[in-house]
Image (cartoon, rainbow, N blue to C red):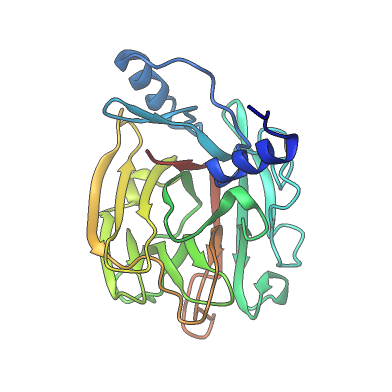
Length: 293
C-alpha cells in the first residue's frame, strides 16, 4: 500500500479540524470539588478556568485572552486593540494576581470616537480562532467589571452601553450583544428582535467581576440556538438565564462569510446634550472561545 505523502497528510489534518488551537488545556479532569474551588476564586480578581465542563463533557479553548503578559493584544498579534486615538481609550490594569484590559469612552471627545461612534473595543476580526462560521457550535466566556459606574436614577437617560458582541463581518448588525440597560444587563439579538434581562440588578456587583457564558449554535436556518448563563460574585457555578432554541443565528443583512467577537465599550447614540453619563470605564478579562462537543 502506498504511504500517504506529507502533502496528503497535511490536507487530511486540515479537513479534520476547522482551526488551530492557540491555548492547549492541560490534560486531565477536574473533580467537582476542584472545579468549584477554581470557579469561586476571589471577587477582587478575575476568575480563570482552564477548562469548561458541562456534565461529563469538557472542551478545550481555541483562544484565550487573559492579558497576563501586560500587552494590549495579550500576545495575539492579529487581535484588534482599539481604533480610538485617546491614549487611555484602552489600557492594561492589574487584576488580583493577574491583569485585565480597560476600555474608556468620554462623550464629546473625538479621541474616544471609533468608526464614527463613541466607542473603544477589542476585536477578533483578524484572528482565525476568534471567528465563527455557519456550522460552528461554540462557547464564549468572559469576565466583566464595571469600574466607577454611575448607576441609573429615575429621569436619567436610558441609553445602554454595549459590552460584548458577536458581530457579523462587513459592517453588519451584531448577531447578539450584551449591554447595560439602566441598572441591569440585557442580552439582545437585534435582527431577530430578541431581548431578555440576564442580570436583574448590577448595583450589588459594581467594582466586582461578573462572569458570562454565551453558547451559540451558528446556523443560517431555524435550527440554531443561544444560551446565556451568568456567574455572579460569590457564586460557585454558572446559572442559565435565557435560552432561545430553533432560531436563525447567522443572519447578516449584507453578505458575510464569517463573524467575530468584540469586547469593550460601545455607547451608541449617546451624547452630552441628551444627559448621558460623560465617562464610562469597563474592564474585561479571561475571554475564551471554545468549541462545544
